Amino acid sequence: SLFRSLTYANLWLYALATAAMLTLFNPFVTVWLHNPDYLLSAACAVAISLNFFVAGYMTTLFTFRSSLGLFSQGWFRPIVVSVLNIGLSVLLAFLWRDATFLGTGDWGLFGVLIATTLSRLLVNVWYDPIIIHRYGFGVSARPFFLQLLRMVGEVAVLCGLLACVKRLLPVTLALPRWEACLRLAALFLITAAVLLAGFWLFNRRTPEFRRISSAAVKRRMRRSGN
Image 1: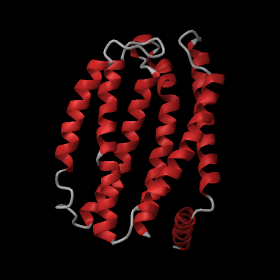
Image 2 (image 1 turned 180 degrees about the vertical axis):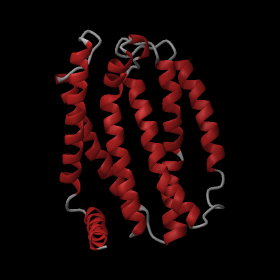
Image 3 (image 1 turned 45 degrees about the horizontal axis):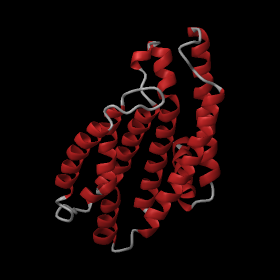
Image 4 (image 1 turned 45 degrees about the vertical axis):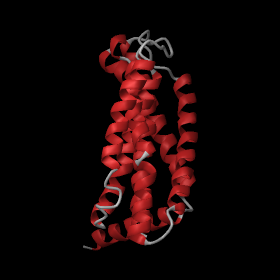
């Protein structure tokens, strides 16, 4: 129960932050530096956001795996991930070094960035939950993966909505700085509203959401009582 609640909260926190990063990454750089040389392609923004999410996803798994003392199971994982990461980085950077995406030529960089995500997806993302559930809890990891897939699908819907909002409210270098700042602020507020509303709509009836909400209310009541 504790594992599911903490994993659920961790996944959604990182998922919402990832969706916000994906939406606001280049608009923020546009307003901050106002220089096209610092803008990355949409592909690189996606790769950076995915790396952030996968790294955050692993934190709860690492904590429980360490707390349960599951060190010998899957001892080879870091070696496999390291070899895959280096190999895929070199291969994908070489294959896509001259490719273009949305008018940019940084697919070599995209290959290096996405290699980290792919290496973790191929090993850690699915193997660590199996180790924890099988050797730590003695149960199947299937409910965990179903919850993860559902959450990823829901976040994908929110990202699609935010992509539409981003098209309707573009922040470009052609705009005056003051107008770009106003659009960025509006985009930030809309992004926060869409993500929070989507989180509540998708999760208001889940047992994990109710459990965390109940714990938060009880904690607040204890504080107010003191």
